[in-house]
Image (cartoon, rainbow, N blue to C red):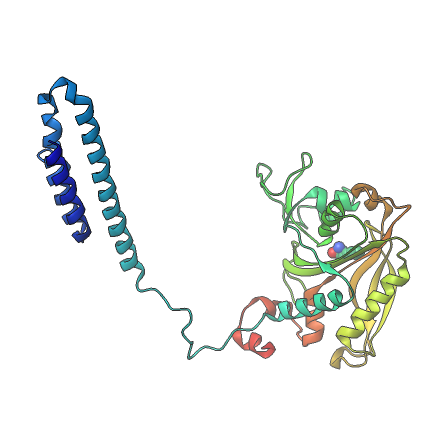
Length: 346
Ligand code: PHE
């Protein structure tokens, strides 16, 4: 019996690598472990083995069976891999040159975003990010936005179904998920995670239920800025915005702060700028961002002492800046992916 098992295993080991189809495999397998297979026959012979030899024989048979199964599994795996490879075709060589296709370029919105972020990086801002899906808490409550604020309305924001749970964004209470309506959410998430001094810009997508027209899109992009330290004043805000505007729109550009209102800044401003070098848009005051000093209420929410720290925040639409810089008069061009449009910014 010992000898027989050895012959079977050697035979399996020799023949398996030669099998090249599933049909061949099945018929070979039948000659070993099928009802009349060689291994099956040896197993049936166990009945005639003397009682004292049974444990040793049984072990030998089991070991042989396990070795045979290992061989069979290897064949199946090899056949499956060959099958898959024939379905997906020959492997591609990513190092080959592409003869008839130019290298792509960044989308015009990404180009402007990079330029803006770069200007802020140069004066010590780092980039912060957070999720696009948010809770009402981070989008509104923590930013001191009251429950009757229009942004909270179903008509103005994209809410998600109540029963939904999202594992990486946790709810505080019985509140709703929504797509963030502004990047100010990143202010809160950053202040909760970091200790002052904080100096960040947060570029990202935002969503509002606007009916698309030449200047509105339901999905658009903003850049948020936040600086918190001891002794930060409006003068620091104004100096930073002056630097930004002169860098992006030319050294002759001027800025102006107009009183405004945001629940999370006090005082709040709209910032306008004016430039003699902007073609059709020259010599007009153009509104490009909301800003202000971080409201002490917001500091209380995130556990920063407003008696010790002050800070400023600003937020602006990337599309708005891009349209001015690139002379684009309809925001919808940015989202149509028409190569005739995109190639002008290559
Ligand atoms: N989040 C405001 C908006 O979307 C802009 C803003 C940001 C205003 C920071 C003040 C401070 O309109």
